[in-house]
Image (spheres, rainbow, N blue to C red):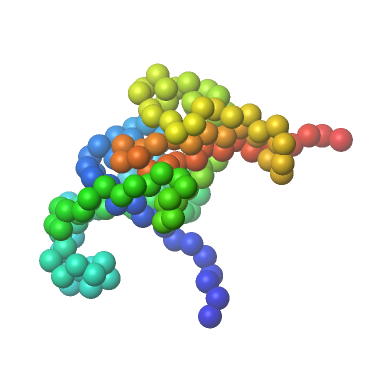
Length: 153
């Protein structure tokens, strides 16, 4: 049976309210729903913690039907993962941006942390594009990518 699509990406965060400020207020995602406490039997079975208590936010990502889900485990609390990009198990999501230099300056002015400086891609399949690795409040890497502008012939 083949996979037929993608529904959402989920990040476990240390503080849901802080993450909402980042994803909603700073990046412009919109809230679909917030559940202040998930304790249902099926959820606990799926996540593998029979006593789990989780805060949840489900967000719309601008320009796409893909969603971002944020979980804060109230119980059992987890420990921060070492999510540096070269560590096995780390990951990132890339979001498309129309004007990355302007967004980069806006994010910097609002205290955003970056893993890398803004990079203009000068070779390879995305030559002419612009790219940067941004860090969310928990150090999760978010790639912001402005594709190269189409050239007319």
